Image (cartoon, rainbow, N blue to C red; front, top):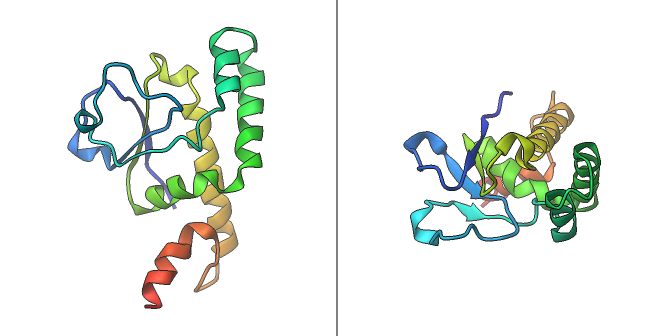
Length: 145
């Protein structure tokens, strides 16, 4: 299944086709009020730790080291991707960040990790009528009521 996850600066205008808009930064963007952002959620758990973010922004680590350490952080917090995976299964997901250069930020790495986790769940669920991966749990709980 193809999933639609786009990246956008939080300072860009919201559009009707953004789908779920989730800010994935540890820090709140400067000069922005929550009501002006049309956010579905502010989800910090899938963003890089403060230490990793600081090391990257101060130039203490290279891009490959940042990517590797960020992926390790996500692997250590196994459930951190589940809320984003659920939103991606419902339709377009727009990941937002205050960073100036989206392609050099954590968002492409996060999008890739979400897509990989979704693909793995799809592989596990392939050929089964009912699946038990956590991303599907909410859907099946609702249908059993």
